[in-house]
Structures are given as C-alpha cells and as structure tokens.
Image (cartoon, rainbow, N blue to C red; front, side, top):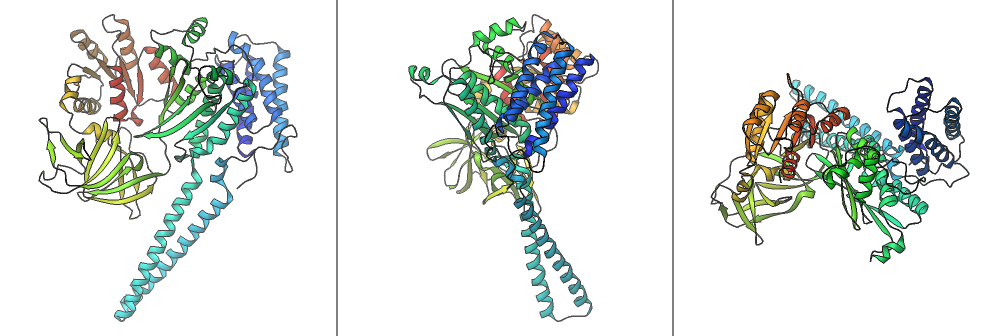
Length: 640
C-alpha cells in the first residue's frame, strides 16, 4: 500500500487551483460568466475541505482567506478593484508553491500538522494488487500456451492414427489445462475488479475527520458510522460522490447536532450520531445521511429564502427542497465550519451532475435525513443463482429472506392472483421463467424475497447457490422486462439476468384492494413516440391505473380540457410544443395548475433538469436510466 498521504490531494488541488486562477483572471478582465463567482467560491470551499482532510494547514488557511474575498462578490455581484484581485491571485500562487513543495521528491508533510493516516480508499490502486493481476494474467497466458501446444499434438496424432491411449492422455491434458486457464482468467477478472472498485466504507476516514474537526470548532461531541459499507462501486464514481457526503457530514454536525448539555436537557445521549447509509434499490443507488440532532428550523429557512427573493413554497417539503437547489444559509455565525451558504445546494448540484436527485426530511427536535437517489454504478454483488424452466437467474442476496422446499397448497384468488402460506404468513406467488406450473404440484422450491409491498414467494426449479458477480447495466429504456436490473457473465460464459424483487412485486397481478384504490386515478401519457407511449401505457395499466395517451403536447392540452387527470407523464422533445411548454401551460391554467407532471427525456444535463423544475414539473427522469419501480413509486407519492 502506498504511504503517500497526498496521492489524490495533489491531483484535486492542482485542478482546483487551475479553476481559481483562470476564474480570477476572468473577473479581472470582465469576461467572467454570471455564475463565475459562485463557481469560484465553491472551488475554494472544496479545496479548503480537501486540505483540511489531509491536514495541510497552509493551503486550508489560504483557501479560507480566498473565501473571504469571494463571499461578497458572490452575494452582490460587484467585482472588487485591482488591489483585491491581486491579493486573490497571490493567495492562489501561495497555494501553488505549497503544492510544489509536496510534489518535491523529498517532500515531507507540513510541520504545522501531523501526517495524516492513509485512507483505505488508496488500497485499490496499490502495487500489491497490480502484481496480483499481473500474476493471474501470466498464469492464464501460460495455461493457454499449454492448451495450444496440446491442440497441435492432437492434430498431429489424428493425422498419424495415434493409439487410443495417447489420444486419451492428450484429451485429459486439454481438460486439465482448460480448467487451469478458466480459473486464472476468473482470478484475473476478480483482481481487475479490486483495482477499479472500492467498498464505500473506504469513505469512513474522511467522514470521521470531517465530523471530528467540525465538532471541535463548534465545541460539540459527535461520531459517524457507515451502514452498507461492504457495497462496492467504481473508484471514479466514489470520488465524484465523496464531496457531497463530506458536505452532508459537515452540515449534520454544524447545523443538526446540539451541544452536549443541550442534548442531555432533552433526554438525548451527550454524543450526537451521524449515520451515512448505502443500499441498492433496483437499478438505483440510495445514499442517506441522517443525524439525531435538532432538525431543520423550517421557519428560519423560509425567512432566509424570502431574504434572497426565492419562492418559499406552499408546503414544508417544497420549502426544504430549496436547500438542495439554492445556496441558503441559516447559520447564526460564520466560521470555517458553516455559515457561508455552501451546504446542501452543493450536494444537490453533485447529485444532478451524477444524474440523480436529493431530498430533505426533518422532524423538529429529533432528526434530519438527506436522501440521494443516484444511478447505481455498483461493483461486486452477492446474489443467489437459481434455475427455472432451463433459464438461470440471479437474485440479489440482500433481497432474499429464505429459500426452502414447501408442501403448502396453492391458493388462487378471484382475480387470478396466486398465493401460498409459508410459516403461517400468506404471500403472493410468482413463478420465474414463464407460465405457472401445475397447481397440483405437491412440493415447490421457493425463494422468498423482501419488497416494499411485503414478502413475495418466487417459485423456481433449482436453487444452485451464492455467486459474487459484477453487474453490467441493461440497455437504455429497457422496458420489455423492467424486472431485470442488470446482467452478468458467469464462469461458463453465459449471460445471466439479475432480477429486481421490487419490480417483480409490481409485475404480479394486483389484488382487488389495490385495483379499487387506483380505479379513479387516470394518467395522461404525452409522447410523440408510439413505442414509448405504448410501453408507458402498458406499465401503468398493469399497475391498475386508467390511461389516456396523446401523440403531441397540443393534443394533450385538448384532452385536459375534456377530462380530469390525476397526473401527466410527458416527453420533453416533441415536434411543435415541447414538454417544458406543456408543463408551463398546465401551471398557467387554473383548472390544471395542481395536476402533477413528470417529465421523461433522453436529455439528462443539469440545465435540462433545472428547466423542468422551473417549468413546474414535480420530477424529471432520464430515459437512459428509466426505472419502472421508481416511476410507479413516484406516481404513487404524487397521487396520494
């Protein structure tokens, strides 16, 4: 493992200093863009946080001073005079000189701070793992060469009518070296995965340092822990996500956790808790940061938003959503921990860059929870391998409650829903691989999975065992079977689908109470693509909704004049009026102003998502990350 504590800091620091230098020069020349000061401020803030994590005091202090210069520029838009701009450039130059000292061959950590411990996240790129990969590849290559030599001897023996004994020995040799090559190739694959994926628990040292430092500044006591830390994701993706999680931990201690005496007065333990959790939800990665502090002061947020001329929303949820969209600060004082308006809006910005979203939930005096919903670029996954009707399937182990043989009889409801009793609990039954098997079958091989709607029994032919696999994403807008969250290649070279229990639960026939509940809910699908309209209509009707479709935004508006709808599902890119204009027209009409709208588009840039929000859409989903489970869950939330 590398002993260099600045390995990643060098790269990040150099990039941020380039941004700062270029941006300040643009301010001086008058060529800066409107949001340049905000971007510069965030760059300085990010650099300060990174420097503090590696305990480089000089760069941390210089970036803090740079924040002092940039803060009024961001607030007022007024560019300072030449003298102040020169001071800002001097600070950047000072940090570049400090970075050069780190880059020097005999560089030592700054004498002003102890050398930081090496974070586990450096392990995936260590020399030992490179050597392991190289060794596996060399062994695999040697085995393949032996196979090639044996094949040559086989061809020669066939031409010479060699005795059966020699042919048998050659065949045994081929089998042996084929097995060796297969094992070494598998080892190479696993070694490569370890190089390019890391467990999310590798973030813990950075989070611990952040919580410790902010707690010291604020004279508080706090600790942090990670849930789901064994989950592995790509190192690059983890690096892009890390600043958001560090900011969440910082905010939790600075704004949420109370001082020990105050906590004890209200019956809490003196040490505050911050929990950062990771889990899969179908194709998505769900990350949350929750603290057991005082909660968000909604009135203070409303006042801060009003002072900035921002809409304060009609509900607390709408108001809290501003925290991940705009730089709003409710801090009573300004210091290195908080109070500069760099907070949850940074988290929201990073989420949007990653193609995800963020939301805030709070309970005054009890807790605050920020949840990030992100595309799931997951590394290794433990899954249960099963076989049904000659097809293999993988079910994520975290969704599996149990596997067993059952002699329970099958129950069939009036609407055709199949159910079975397991350990005194009645649950729906779904057979993998096609049409239901004989109802008279005496013994069934079942896998019980947990879903948000309760347990679901999956009937299979065989339970083979547990496998550790690397999921690959399914094609964009893979709607033909939304219960498939990914695919992987097993040892025999065959592709195997990875199933999503949540989507399987939605695929089964609905019980009568569910149909009754949504019977009056009608959804309007507006899309110029016949394929998209038909697929979305099929998904919604399967879930029990009534659905009307329109091939253009103009036709959609005419339908809204004729009938009331509970929700509109709208494509963005259409000939004539686009989806943004449709939603604006929806909001501009008193009769339809409160009808929820979800935009669906192949465009997924932060500016497109912001345009959807400005138009008045409640959500924005990218076609390349389409998730049937998430769509139905969101529709359920908006139509309650």
